[in-house]
Each structure stands twice: as structure tokens, then as C-alpha cells.
Image (cartoon, rainbow, N blue to C red):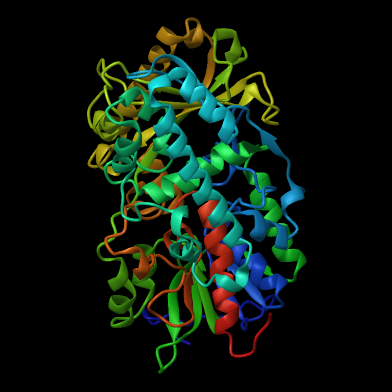
Length: 535
């Protein structure tokens, strides 16, 4: 076949040109989809443009320090209510890696909170800690955590019954049948916190200090999604993959290959092929630097890349129909991550928790979070954004030391780095890295002198390496739905094009649990769509 540029595509002699399913992108969603399809008996090809699998779920070295790219924490997949539980268990992957308990959810200090507050693991323990700190809010705290527990438990229970699931958020849709399990389908986090905690901004920050792991504005963060995510954190506890998230990615890849799936690295899909009826029949992929087009065929295509990245792969007409459902869906926030290799364990400077949330002095309310990314539009001044600190040496992380790895995470956006030449970009990045070091040194004296190695990744870094539009790390923004609960939720791995599916956070909700859930659901939908079932 000749592609759109008039170049003859070939099939390498070492590989087939006919599969049951082709998966584009080897992030956690794509790996989960490919492994699920292969385990179901499908001839599956997974195509990845980079040199290894994992995407954002990867680990690498910078000098002597081991750097976790972005999977700083997740929930416990051994818990039956965890969104990853069924998918990873079905692939026999859960126990192929170690899930290290990280202790408390976080230690938060500064801003409206003032002195340190530790949010512990366990609904009862969290309630007791919050009531002890805010005794006048006992009723509101009890109601809030009760709702979070019911939402988390209900969704987790439903997610184990695959027959009830055709979409990744159908578990949430099913809550409409559970009556009191959900109140306020269309509420934002701000609205729910105001109903239960009133004007007490310190209490709001105590329960939602780590909001940057989903969004940067409580006025537009969907309450149901926050309840599911934070409720899961509290109920099952925070976990870190021993040795880094690359081990989880590798375990999924091994599961896929063990089931007969094939993996093709350093190849970029440039075109999705369609027959005369408008159904996908395969793809064309090229070398990472372009050229050497190769055509492979399959009646199912599952994509782990963003819809806007997929669109140019589609023919006119199909492209417009494919993109129409996403036209009004804004992208999620991006993040920056500064990782430091420390000569001494950070506990030496007072950083004893795995996760610490530092709220700046200027922050007087949870809603002030929305100013975070704006600060990085300029060179650093006195005001610092809210920061999340992941202290890997506080647990048995497997990342080694010395140097001891520590990551600092904050909200970012591509616009903060747009239009800078290489020299200006590096100067601004270095200035912000130094500003973060000095800020931490003021809170934890001696920190700055112990930094041996440092790496600073921005929204532009995420855009470049992952191909994420605007550096978006969570797919689409987690906004409240505009329609009543009986209309359900709009997000699904199923697209407007038959037999074309999404296996990333764009097909469901953001985060790594969401990507794995979306990948597994995309695979189930793909299996149902095959003319000859491989189930």
C-alpha cells in the first residue's frame, strides 16, 4: 500500500502484518489493554515511539540518583475496592511487584493550616484526627468522610463485576441506582466542602491539601471524582512501587509478551487505515525520526495517545467525527517535578513523612490553589506555589541512596515556557529550581547544602517526552458533569468511530489507576467488538 505521502509501506519479514488488535502507545493504559487482549487470545501488536515502555510510569538515572518520573503514589491494588484491582489481578501482575505502604496520606503545614497536621490512613483514623484538630466540625467531618467512604466502596465493589461495565465510568453511572451512596452528582469540591465544613479554610486544606494530584481549582474539580480518589487513598492507604514505576510497566509488558503479544519500540504510528465502510483496518508506522513506513493490519485499533494527537492520523471526515465529542473538554493541568539527590536522608532535616504538603504563606483558602501555575509564568519572586514532597527514603522505596532521592511537585502549564529560546528556557528553569531549594532550606535548614544532584522537569518536558498536549498529565480536566445523574457520564474508551478505542486517561478519569482501568475497559470493549469473540 502507498501512504498519503506516496511512499510505499512494507512489512518487515520478521513480523506478521495481520493482527486481531493493534495498540498505540505503551503507557500503563496501553500496556494494560495490550496484555488484556493478548491474554484473551488476540494476536496483539503494541507500538511505542520511545526506547522503552511505561511512558510517564518510568524510572531513570541522572548521575547516581534514581529518578521516579511521575508515579509518586497510588492506592493499594490488593484492596478489592481499588480501581486497579480486577485489571491487575486478571493479568497476574499484582504480586509481580512490591507495593510499599507509605504511611500517612500526608503531613500538611503552612497556609491556612499553620502548624503541621497529619492525615492518617483509615477512614476512622482520619475522622478522629480531623475532629481532634477541628472539634466544632465533628458533624460535617463525619458526613464528609462517610460520603467519601460510601462512594469509594460502592464504585470499587461495582468495578469487580465486569458484566456491569461497558465504560470506565459506568461504575460511577451505576451509583444512580444506589440512592444515598451519592449526593450532589453535579457538585464541585468547593460546593461539597462548603456544605460540610462551612467557611473553615484550614479544615478544607486538611482534607484536600494534595489537590494538585488531580486539579488546581476546587470550584471546578468534580466532587465525585475527588471523593473516589481521596477516599481510596484514605481507605486503602498510599502505596509506592518498590524500585520505581518502571517495574510495574515492565511487569505488564512481560504479561503481554507471555500471552503471545508483540512489542515494537522506536516506531511512531502516522496513519490509521480505514476500509470503505469507515471501519479501521490497520495502521502505518514509521521510524522514530521518520521514514521507513510499515503497514500492519487489524480490525481493532486501541490508542493510548491523546485524541488531538490521534486526529492527524485519521482521514478527513472521520477526523471531524472522531473529535466532535471532545470539542468542549478542556485539558487537565500539567505539573513540574524537581528531583534532588541528597547527601543525607531528608529526615535529617525534619522531613520524616513520605508525603509532605507545603502550603505558602500567601495561601489563605483552598481556592487560592488556582494561582499556583500563574507564579511560574515569571521568574521566581518571594511567593512560592503549593508544593508536594515525595521523600523516597522515608519508606523502603528501593531507590537506593546515598544520594537519597526526593521529588518536589507543583502545578505548571505549557504557557509558562512558551516562546522561550533554549538559553532563556534553561535560565528560567535553573532559577526556579534554585528558588525551590532555597524555599525548602528556609523550612528545613541544611537542605540546600545537602543537594548533590538535581533535575527539573516542566510542563514543556512532559509535552516533549510524552507527546502530551499542553503537558496535560491527567487527560481531560475533571470537571463536574453538566447533565443530571440519569444521563450518566460522557467519558468512555469507546469513540465515535466503531472499533477504535482509547486506552489512556482520556478514556476515563486521570491518574494511573484511571489509565489502568481505562486500558482494561477498552480491551473488554474491543473484545466485544471483534467479529469472532476471543473471550
